[in-house]
Image 1 (cartoon, rainbow, N blue to C red):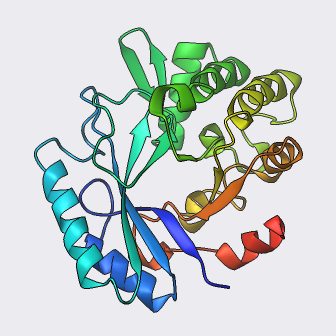
Image 2: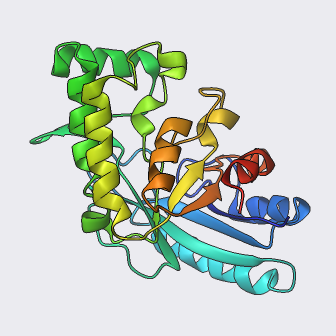
Length: 251
């Protein structure tokens, strides 16, 4: 089976490799399509995203690679647009919609930065109540289509990044389930595919993708569509464990 991977990152944002190195790795892996995306610019937290100054250079480099490797692989240029993006997504082949932050008026906090940081945010901003944090998080996630107008919905349950084995909170808890179900019900009605994102597996945080199996099953039961993506920030992680999760999807 030949795969496409439409969610990878390069050194134009927070990735390790150049776009060309990512393209060459995708060719070596036998992919028919590779999509390289930039994290959208957020003025309140510019450290991980493409700068306004380098955005046009990124688009220009992607155009060069499309032309150079046209006979070997289809190259696509995308943007990962957060619901708190500062500027609209314009001039890209496709948009991946995402939500990376807890947000309190003008205060913001990463959802997926580091485990100790995450725990500290839950303690300080949510009084140690992980289910309150989940309710806040999924309320934001439910806005992904409305706010970003995406072609793909990214890492739906990113809040579980540091929760391997339910070590912080129980994803079967009624409050968590209600919050997640509400977001699923809102998003599936748009008929936009959810990614099965293996990025947290390749980086050693999880043994299941986003969404985890319980959420995958619910999305599938409610008519949701899926595509496989690696969220690779390094060339070696392109198409990571695609064979395994393609089998889970079946036909």
